[in-house]
Image (cartoon, rainbow, N blue to C red):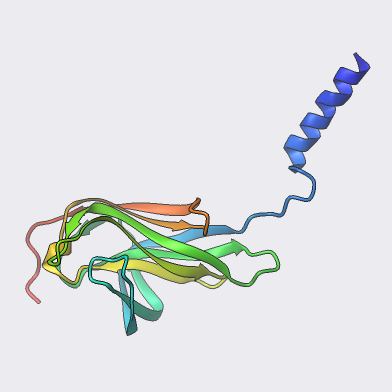
Length: 169
């Protein structure tokens, strides 16, 4: 019986502390979300998006917290996130993934996922979507996920996108 109690105690300690030598994984947390407005400072080629372009913005990003989004040209929504723990690394490489309803582009592509590389740091960062083209205006659930380079989900937020009348701009 003594050996059994000792083995059980070792399992309990392992469950409490984790495997020996295991490094703490960086945690990425979403700190805000909703309708957004940010200053655009440029763009970059992004082949895994419907328009093939990713807008670059600089902060601060204004946010009206909501998960209900009306799909209109010029409407943007997204998440504000940060690395909660980076260990010795000051930058955590991530991939932003947007799972969305089927988008059919004018060049014939059919997409339900868009993605681009990014990074998380202890300061707040922004990842989001702006409706730029009529073919992007599709209703349904849109989920913005932050994933590590192995594809594991670190954090995500789902938005309910609807279509209908839009203000005249």
